[in-house]
Length: 307
Ligand SMILES: Cc1cc2nc3c(=O)[nH]c(=O)nc-3n(C[C@H](O)[C@H](O)[C@H](O)COP(=O)(O)OP(=O)(O)OC[C@H]3O[C@@H](n4cnc5c(N)ncnc54)[C@H](O)[C@@H]3O)c2cc1C
Image 1 (cartoon, protein in one colour):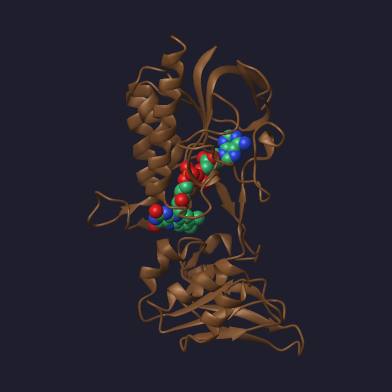
Image 2 (cartoon, rainbow, N blue to C red):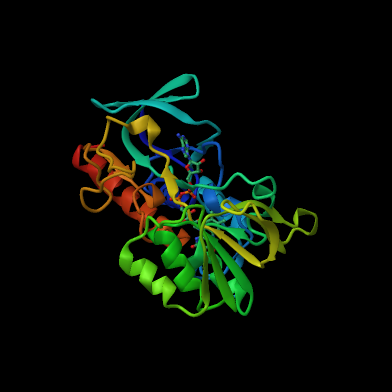
């Protein structure tokens, strides 16, 4: 029987592990299929406090893990496939084995939706991004492309005009899903060019490890062309990694965990941390802060029970 299991080894899970390990709770961290989480996909992180020269994303999350292990956190490779949170102790099936725990911290993140272009994954962190707040700064005076038609695509396109020489907003339909006000804001921004009925067929140039252009197709005319671009931002949404918890704790319509204040979920003893609940900020530092909150709540919860 464990005191705490932490699901996820991104910034939220690792920070929760540091705090719970220092509280002597001997946390077990389930690393998941993406050890290190989303930061392991990127290169330079310039906005995590404490690193004036920036820090490599994978190095940052690995350092957090080392810090947690130094205090006694245990990490296992594995993926939570099933959970029974109906009564305590909570039961989790990690691959083929069941584990029991008094408290649970869910820090399983939200995965960006990608376009599944032939070269897209190879260029993530090298010009392909899913986060304007994180990477916009790298494209000062450069050509930027944003893909999507919802509010977040409009917001990212507007935000990116602070940096880019131009922003081309590419959408496959002729109508946008975004709210009227966001569409108007984008339309009125002189730096934004809006291309509708247009799909991206690929992004280049994987051989140079650098985005240089995107291949586009107009769905009405079938015209295909290559557009020079330096920063390629995919803004077609995120998928919260909550499938094992459907029906176990309260989730919103999109599958994000509904917070009941602090780091609490609808189930006592189950806490949330990071992007799995936060659809607004989605940053390494906010995820780390949320991991700290979840750990303190788990610790106090156990203490109140006399553990
Ligand atoms: C390309 C890119 C660049 C970014 N750059 C920056 C940046 O410069 N600055 C910044 O602040 N933020 C940046 N971000 C955002 C930042 O990475 C996220 O906000 C942060 O990683 C969220 O942390 P998290 O721990 O909540 O989730 P994640 O990092 O998504 O980690 C989730 C973890 O949960 C695990 N998991 C998922 N499902 C299961 C399961 N069923 N069982 C077990 N484990 C599971 C995964 O394996 C993973 O380890 C970037 C994101 C991307 C994609």
